[in-house]
Structure formats: C-alpha cells, structure tokens
Image (cartoon, rainbow, N blue to C red; front, side):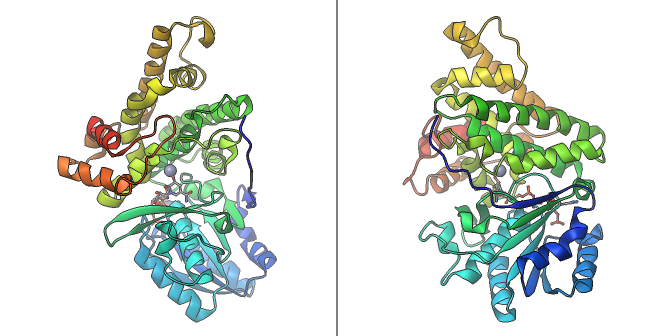
Length: 400
Ligand code: NZQ
Ligand code: ZN
C-alpha cells in the first residue's frame, strides 16, 4: 500500500430540495457578491435558475449572472468571467450545472485570484496559488468536478483541451439533489455513467500492490453504477437510481478510489481530451469509444488486474482462485472482462469505436491528436503501460 493524502474539503448537501438551502449556505460563506455561472439553456428551461435567483433575492444576497458555458468549456468565456468578476467585485462563484460549468467557474476563480494569463496554469507553466471560492449546484452526475481538484478547459486558439489540478479550487460546497438530473437527455445520462465508471477504472488499473479496501470500494462503485445506469435507461425519473449515480459521480473522482494506489493510469482520459478538443465530442462518449482499444493494447502489462476486474466487476466466473489459474486462463478472463465492459457500454447506447462515436478520423488527424497528447513528444501518458506518441497513434488507429 502506497502512502497517500486524502483531502476532501467539500461540504456535501445531498437529497430532495437540497438547493432550497442555498441562501443560508452562501451566508455561511460570508460572501458579498456572487456570480451565478451556468450553461446553455437547461438550468433556465427547468426553472432552477429562476428559483435560485428568487432565494438569493429573498436572502439579500447580491448577485450577477454569466451563462453560456458550452460542454468542453471555452477559454474565451473564462476570460469574460474574469473581467466581469474583477470589475464587479465578485467574491464567490456559484456554478449551476455540470462539469463544464464547474470547471469554467474554477478557471474564472484562478484568473481572479492570481495575476497574469490564466491559461498558463493549464499549460503547466505556473501553479495557481489561490482561487476565488466556488460552490456548485450539480445538475448532471458525471465529471465529479463538484468534489475534484480538477478543471478542464478548451482553448479555441489551437483547440487544445487541457486540465489544471489544484486543491485550492475544490468546491466549498456541493448541493446535490438527484431530482435536478431527471431532465437529462438519455445520451447525457449515459455519458455521465461512462465518465463515473472511467474515473474509477482509471484508478483501478494501476501497477501498484493490491490495496484491498480501495479495490473493494471501487468494485462496489462500478457494479452499482452499471446496475443503475441500466435502470435509468428504462426510467430516467427513478429517484434512487439517480441518487446512487449522483453520489458515485462524486466518490469516483474525489480521490477515495485512488487511496493507497500509485495514482492510476488516466491514459484514456488524456487520449479522449484530444478528441474533445478537435471534434467537440461529449467526454463520456469519447471515453467509451477509446477504452476498449486502450485496454487491449495494454492489458498484458498487468493481466491479473484485468482478470480481477472481469471476475469482481463483471461477475465472470472463474474456475478457481485467480492465483491458481494458468497464464492462458488469466489472459482469457482479462479479454472477457474487456468485452463485458464494451457490452455494458452498448447496453446503454454508448459507442465502443470512433466510427460509432460518429467521427471519421484521418491518418493526418491521428498524427496531430497523438502529437498534442504527447505534448509534442515530451511526455508519456499512463501507468499500466507508459504510452509514447507511437503507442497513442496505435490506440487511435485500433479504435477506428
Ligand atoms: O448547457 P446546458 O444547457 O446546461 O446543457 C448541458 C450540456 O449540454 C446538459 N445538462 C446538464 N444538466 C442538465 C442538462 N440537460 C438537461 N437537464 C439537466 N439537469 O448536459 C450537457 C453536458 O453538460 P456538461 O457540464 O458538459 O457535462 P459533464 O458534467 O459531463 O462535464 C463534462 C466536462 O467536464 C470535463 C470534461 O472533459 C468535459 O469538459 N471533466 C472534468 C473533470 C473534473 N473537473 O474533475 C473530470 C472529467 O474527467 C472531465 O474531464
Ligand atoms: Zn472524465
């Protein structure tokens, strides 16, 4: 078991009507002027935005608004938000939405609290020393940004999608009412479930010694999400299924499923982020499209772990304890687990190839994607197998 630091400072207010507490929660934060930050139209269509504005007015909390965050949130709106906050004296950002809105809020928070160009933090030229406090009212269970230390932004100049991880950006609070996710389109629900699975799988597939408790938590979380994703396909307003998936979204990305491991792989995420940057695909769907190709490319580096995934997550029977199996038996279990995962993705109408994702990627584009993913061949990605540009090219090609 590796040493670890587990830091989850976000206060969680979970359940029906949770958002009604927003007035008192913001007062607890002692803020004077709040920026309401939100996406395209879902929060106003559902009436949520209006309800929050009414509560803030009744609570005497001064606020202004900036909507229009796109999925794969853009740097240009972040700049707009930074200027708005600075000129209006905003001292708290309330993100109403999903990962894109929360990530945009964190980026604005960095830009206000630090000197200089905010994109520097995403290019890893500098580390943010501070962030304006951010809180979230979550409307989609997916990215886990409500409890993670991460923000992912797309720079339209070059269509680069880059992440910045810093604990200073962790949300002060996350309001999670599963009912707020009832209005999600089926596709977005499924994309979210993939992302939750992947945040756990990226940590589960590692090269560390076994950490039984963490593995057990991860395996239970993955079984739980698959079960409830299927229920939500039949009944999007099943409260308990929405609640299970919503809580899983936070636990899958707040660090819990990485405790005592080597930090996990995250190559699929890095490979997908380039697809998001170039083709503007939904993050979860992009992950589903690439994962099988990644898994088949790397599983022989740690076949026992893939076999464990097959048995403990996908209930594929094993004739005996894994330790007593032959190499061939482990290999075949590992491959069966990968197939079972792809079958699950298909069962919720998620793609398992780039073609199914709806994009046709040329050889030249693959070169460009891999060049960007390897930061101009200056880094490798992944831990199960460290992948350089040529490996990443192969994974994109095999995913077509
Ligand atoms: O823009 P609106 O109209 O609000 O519509 C959104 C958007 O089109 C819609 N939506 C959200 N809540 C809804 C709703 N529609 C109906 N009813 C509701 N209740 O859903 C669409 C997707 O929203 P988005 O916020 O983009 O989804 P998600 O939470 O999946 O976030 C994806 C972004 O997060 C990044 C991804 O790369 C992507 O940019 N990630 C952030 C992470 C983090 N900060 O920790 C980790 C992840 O790995 C991920 O990279
Ligand atoms: Zn993700």
